[in-house]
Image (tube, rainbow, N blue to C red; front, side, top):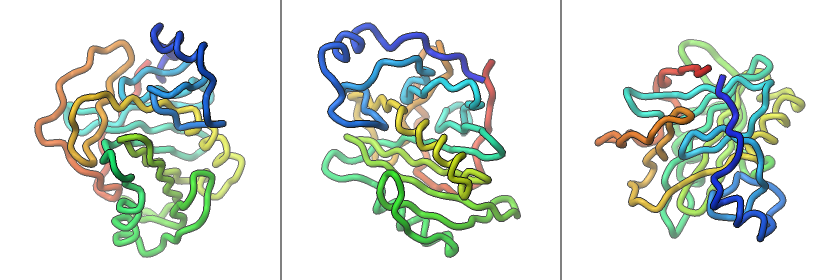
Length: 212
């Protein structure tokens, strides 16, 4: 399980003390005012610290591409992607998902339109909910599967977790749908893969690693 990040970066703390958040909740962009809190620093994502959640990195080869959060017989998968400056990605990603999963339907959720139903993975059928959040030049995909997809108490705990996530997009040029670079806590940022893969939520999953 990841250890919590004791404090946000000093330069960000000063900004947050002088400017109150303009929204009630996140996910937050690193450059906007947001509440100071103990968060797990994974480079491109800063995650709220909750001792009840088991947080793990998901990797493809040498590249960390997402996060898996385990809680109450459920999982939350988070992936942050680079998005165009002029428009978001959720409508486009939602269309791709619906083309591959016929048992999902659109419904209104805490972050707007979401997809809910059942998916097949590794020969098993599991309830799942797909939530997409468009941010400034980034897109955050959250997939909740297992008990949390239909148990409102578990689902609500995951939603609260997502609302306190901070996305660190950075200023470097990135291709559309390129995964925002993640790293292990206290690890120096490594070079990005030369051929990053686009989003495919139904492709065989990445390797999941736990850090203690």
